[in-house]
Length: 451
Ligand code: UGA
Image (tube, rainbow, N blue to C red; front, side, top):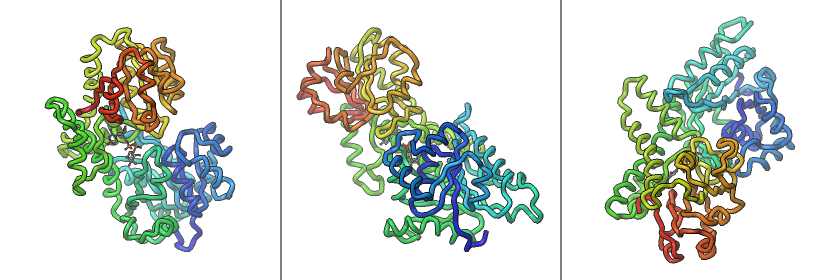
């Protein structure tokens, strides 16, 4: 590609990562075409509506549609013709054996390849196992039609993994800790550095403080390693929580004690019912398969997964140990999403617990600030579930309150009032959201995790 050619970006797949990336680059001043194959979703976005819950993204969509720098299409050919940097953000879901299913990436590479007539930089942003980019490059090259010379000249593949969190996606796009760029053609450094220049200026940072250029495999591995490490921290602290429960210690104090050491760091040491969501569990499973494929002993990560799986039964057993048989008991459930700040219930520990409680024939009064619609779709009709209007409504006549997602608004509830609503003043705080003393003072029996 001519280094002086005007940069224009196409982003394929407008989910959490794709739409955030597209709007982020557009807001930084680049012309961006968003490509979404789901026509209903594409039309929604074209009309300025965001098909998922993500803080701040509606305003950014309105702003960038209005500026004319962001447009949306379902037409891959149009996007390939009009952009020179093509960013792939389609899903890589988990296959039955845990492997990442890269078929959406492969299909997209095929379609992009069929429409390439001039040089393109194709960026793999979707999380995928090491060596995926190499496979995609082969697909891209073998699908280029009608080219006169060597197809090799027409495509460069680059891996720029995404580290943004759901619920904080825009904040993370505009304030990255690092941007990893994996490439085998180092002549592209200037061009790729250039698309991030407006961001670096905004952040007041130099390139060397944020951008990491590396080879393609290292970039792919960086992403899986980051999520596996975060998962490890959570399972580690949950393992210690089990010990604390056993000996009557307080895991929160232990976590604080170790977290203040900068070599350890305090983030991701929050004990609870475990990690969920569409990324950590899936990426951990996929990385374990990468270990197997490469004959590397990744049993360490299998333990991380095992500890996380145990959270669900440990928590339910904790409730049963106190309440006995849960059949026809009424439980108030606070929180369904996999973490606060999102309506996403994919692989949510809360949903796994709720599903088990229904099997045990408990009656549930459930509340979540955002995730009720998604939950209703998932669970279908059940006469065991009452959908509460408010957190306090979820506590009326219950035998216990179960805190499953650490929404901050739950901390604002007045437990003096709630004490009068509940049948039995018991609280099982699956996220260690509350101060045990505060609840004990209000007459509640408090059960946390590892404290
Ligand atoms: C995660 C990573 O944090 C992002 O860096 C990454 O880009 C993203 O996956 C991805 O691969 O796309 P996300 O899935 O949004 O982001 O969620 P996290 O904030 O990481 O939380 C994951 C789960 O861990 C949640 O269920 C949360 O409740 C749990 N968690 C987190 C704990 O149980 N304890 C903690 O200390 C922190």
